[in-house]
Length: 183
Image (cartoon, rainbow, N blue to C red; front, side, top):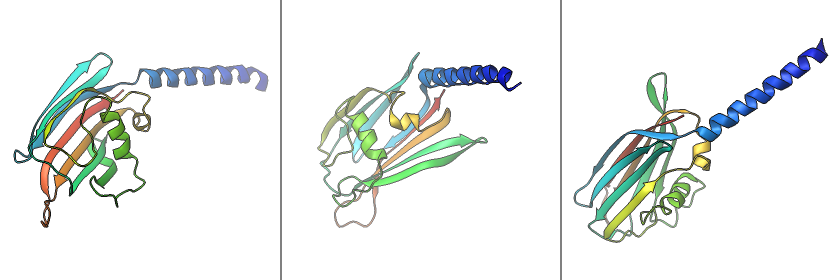
């Protein structure tokens, strides 16, 4: 009896592994909605989504009106839809212009490395007054950040703020939310 079930078990395992490989290789990211707001005292910004058969790409155009060399922080959250509600899975905040904020959090550096492949926008300080753009930005299916996230519905939220020298409050620079599905 054990001898008969062994080929069946092995066949099921092979089919299961093949199915997982097919799903993993054909996974794609489709952006379903983008919300953004920018502070007109700092910059103008436009975001466009290009939904294509192999997934979504993003174009960003921004014009920064002033030089900024300190007091810039970014908060990035990844929310997952569970039981009809979005819940934060991963959240990080990083001071972009501080040499002291060199924590072990890999999210911002990994995103920054990807961003720089598609234009002149980055999370590296200082930020010089001028025009910034990103063309056809996408996270490849085999990127570590994508591999960590199972299929489902998500929101990536970015909140960039600036604290002027000698000020106690932070000014919002932009907020950006990407709603997307991984299939």
